[in-house]
Image 1: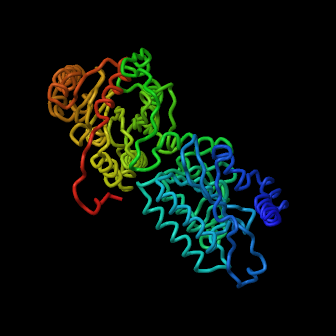
Image 2 (image 1 turned 30 degrees about the horizontal axis):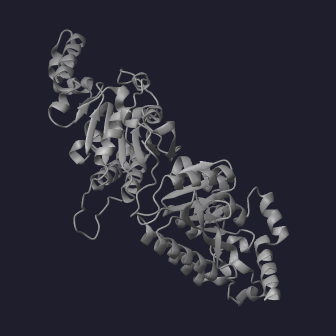
Length: 513
């Protein structure tokens, strides 16, 4: 036994160490090894590896001459802040992290274990794609991964972290995940690479221009989080996990209450200008509402006219959606609708209450938006809110105009608690626009159209847009002092904590994808 034990330890040591020249090459590229990444992600000493000795069984194209252990992916389980997670980390030092039959089987196994134990799954991706030498079985391996991701959707949180190349069909492991992280300079994500694009179209493009972190963080919206280095990226993965439940049956992790129900925030009365067209940063409002001013913004660089964050209010995790007046006056457009809809659906799937901060002048007008399908994409957000059964609270900060107001979790589509500031303006459209439409003929015939317009605008505001108009009709539950918004939201969430709502019996709805 002593000899066998020593032999086993030597083998494990060699497998864990890897080939020195390959490790040095990985470090020279500015990347950590798979095991170094796992160590940085998980609690110290918590990782339990499975399938360390797995080797591929392929023989064609001289594959039988090179059969390294692990087959290019390290799999297992550990903890983050003491909570169980499962992880797989592709090892670029072995076959370029390419996926073959054994490699895929290891990922299948760890994903199955994550679902059966109700634990989040985290994929650390650094791979050249399907292993060409193994042919169709490699493609089948990806199919098994995709099928498992879809089956686990809404059951356990799924996080993909792109730390190197991720090309071809492998990109769908990122596209299907709940959250995707990417690191600048090293992450590359695309379906067809620069060489293929040049061969087909003659267009020359670099890896970064085609599928770098900033492309997917700012333009495509595939990456929810973008980081400058692996260390900060993996730390934010830990932070994200700390805000998520382990599965759809467990509540989000809560902290002790911090007295939010009695909190007064004078800064809230100063942040938002009374003038309806003057911009401000909605994130400053969010910081005053949430515990310690701390929040994790999702898709920070994409569709920035809407803000989506995960945070805590009085120790309980919430998802916050807010219009951003700093960008396009906070209008809803194609990208913002998709961004908010996906976030709302994730929160609802995992029992995270929703707080919506409304300051929206409408949908972005223009032929481009109409031709790009704003009706269909706006319907995604409408569908997401209408379908959500978690506790829902909204705060109307200033403008709430037209169809965009309805879509932003209005009372008519099911919000549980509607709060409004005295600066609220809930109407089909702004006073100026409404007067121009209603009294078009009178204004055209007037000898003093400017004076008449001012008089009619004042009359419109007094009759239809005064602070208590919606409250008098039961469409707003309370008009609150802005400084007490945090307390009012916290009290509302506490009131709704045990909300139960059964969805209608059906196979599934037809989301306007």
